[in-house]
Length: 301
Image 1 (cartoon, rainbow, N blue to C red):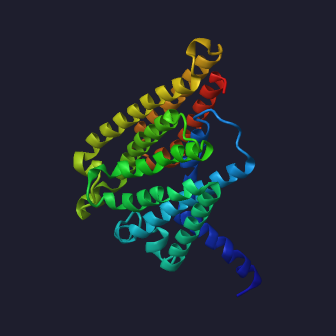
Image 2 (image 1 turned 60 degrees about the horizontal axis):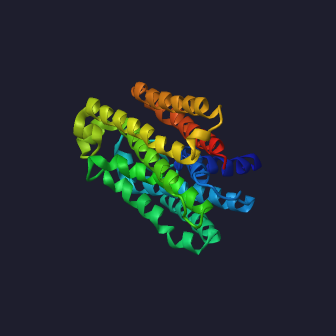
């Protein structure tokens, strides 16, 4: 093996590992976690705590995808759309996948321990959700809410990490409700890719249960409910609306309109799932973060 090949191989393996856990999808959860940090008044966090929160988020997100790929590897091997994934295609071994899972869980648990004993005691909750939700599609068409629950933990985790006293959790709870409905809604859209395969192999989803048209109506309703969940979040962060600065309401209405437009695009782009899922969704999380920061600024804290 040449020196050039030896230098390239580790980079290729890292790319394979990142693809295996869809590392770029961390952009779905990270802005929601940051929004949770800013969802209640409190002192500025030291840089070290920000680093721990970010590493815990990346570790948890990586563990979640690794568990999903390991649990679903036999289904993925039979599905023509997913046969090219790393495990069924043989680009990664089971040993590598398990090692990556163990490493990501170690990072997550170590960060929880560094944040405080309480965080380590409750660290099992996300891990339990990550283990359970891949199995739901084997039993219930409501499996999409399992994925939603996993992402709904992001703003709650950010809030808890920044506010150890757990005071004023209501805005974070509203963000979690938004994430639950938003993610469940777009997971229904994503499930349309596998309608035929799922019907043939007994996989449960809203698409299989209600048909594509019915499932898309449920998805649209969930996205409407997600928008409504943000209303109490904004008013909670603003506090005394009567004393809001003049710029606040136009700015908040503009950002809310942008979120509505993005969720509407997800529905309109239902035939182009990759665009709706991988492009629009990344933007949604950051616009929600902008809404939280703007409302907080209007509230003066």
